[in-house]
Image 1 (tube, protein in one colour):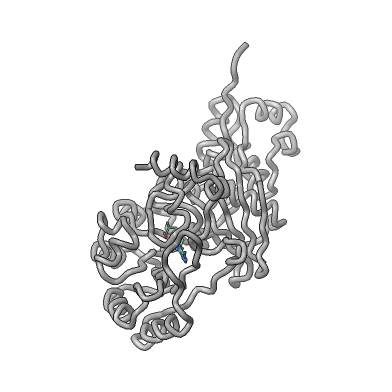
Image 2: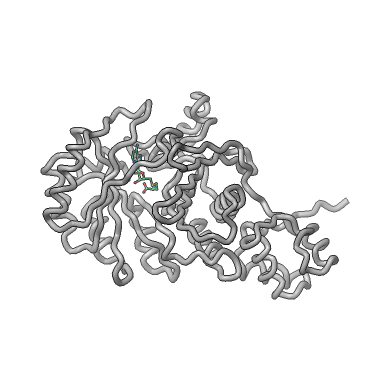
Length: 361
Ligand code: SAH
């Protein structure tokens, strides 16, 4: 008996699928048809790809698989935000979030199971890093959400702001953007994708040279090196000054800006001095600032500042002609808001959490 090793089509960009087909004697152009079935029509069964000859369908079903994350749970917030708990083929869990009417429809995707960055106020950080997602698992979240939300054929934006640090999983993230952008598939232009990062500098420099360039959001959160060292530990390796220099050099498109995310922590980084320092730091960068008043959670020792404090901070930025907005928190009632993603298995099993923390150390 021979054991058959199937190729997972979810992990292939169009070029790779063409080559794979050719290598088994199937004409390359069928790859486009397969992409259309999978990404535009949401079909995951080769047998249902009815414009392919029956023989070919049989051959595909034999040689190829298409792994797709399984929906374990869907929770819908009062504001329409929907959080999906997904199970990967190896049993790990991730979360993805649909945010309606922002004014566009937005999918917030995970790039890792857990996260290694250890930001002091983020719940995902408590999981530690369990593993990277593959490109197919990143794109798979979009396929599942489109299907579950009956959104095939509709336009949507993508933010890489779920679990994980996209620049700590660079190759899979970029490959996922290539698969998403393919005109024979979902054709998601990189203008509709925003990559959010704490600033893994070597990867950020690499991103600056990519042909497919997503919008950039930087999780800044602090205005001095000391303060950022504590809140965003990777700052000890790649400091604030270097990060902002890299942002100054970053080739942003005309009429575009880099978003700076700034989590506001009561009495920690929300003072008028912080606001004034932030104005200075952003001098010379085409920036917009997105203030995120902390989403509080058990296990996070910081507090959310009052609306007055947030507004005062925002006013100082605006007075200095910095483009600023306060992010309206979505889906807080279902723990789908920024920094609140943490999968159930970790929430309920302190042993697993400890094990994960030990693995990553
Ligand atoms: N690792 C990337 C992608 C995650 S994006 C990054 O950090 O940019 C998630 C955003 O939510 C980040 O800006 C993160 O700092 C922010 N965030 C994390 N915890 C939060 C919390 N408790 N309240 C509000 N925002 C939070």
